Image (cartoon, rainbow, N blue to C red):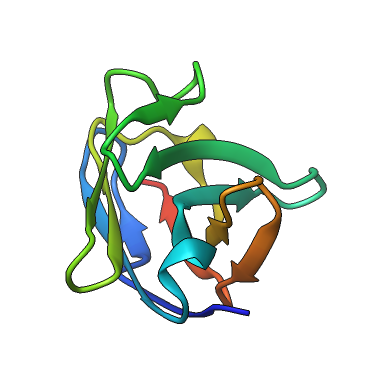
Length: 117
């Protein structure tokens, strides 16, 4: 299992920006895929973005062009840069890791992002 600690959530106005960070500890193969999911009140948890160790990224259509995911393999960190935030982006954001066969190896505790004027 991978231990994940998130930081960087908060309250921001529509159109603003936030950066989420997630520090991971564990086996490198267990962190083949690092990513972010989110869960809004009354909704199911949904995919936001993932990044492979190679740097290949994947984004949900709802965040393409606004969010950017980075990872630092030396520091075992994944970062989500969120720009042009909308009220619909309000959710608890969770860091996630998967191994080389796409099995989940860890979830963070979640960090709240609220977009409101």
